Image (cartoon, rainbow, N blue to C red; front, side, top):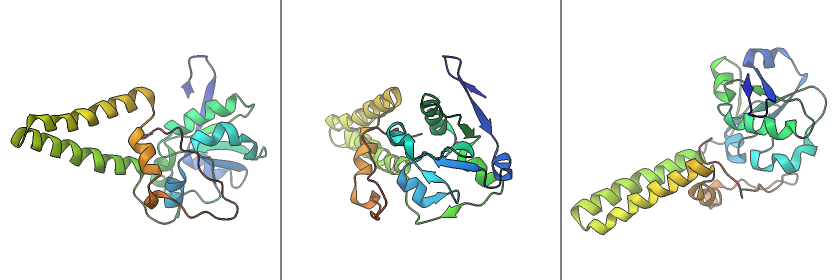
Length: 193
């Protein structure tokens, strides 16, 4: 069980216990729409963490409320947001990773690279090329890995990743809009949660 400094706690629930609830559960997936599109628990509702505080009225109030993310960290943040809105949420212990590991089924969609992996694919080669150019061409190129290092440090300290926000707006990361879908607010994003 996790505890916040104000001594309010959220209950963890295992994948097996969620599956045993057999339809008497409301599953809220707080991951990004891209992550949700890639794979999700059938019947879950996607309410991304940055939108949760403004879209909580879309959450059904019947059944046990369980929040889901990839590993459980963002779900825990979402649970504390909903506690302030008079919900009694539980957190899927270990997230979707534990759900899969326990043998439970997931609904798979279009495979896309997560924003986290896209960030790694930009930062890694950027740092390597900056070091290579700085050592073999001109030391001024060492500003490139310094820039990436400063950006990652800022992201770690604040939970906001500018590169992640930029990549979320890239055309290849846009889901087609359907009649009932709402545009995602990406103004607040944790790049690696």
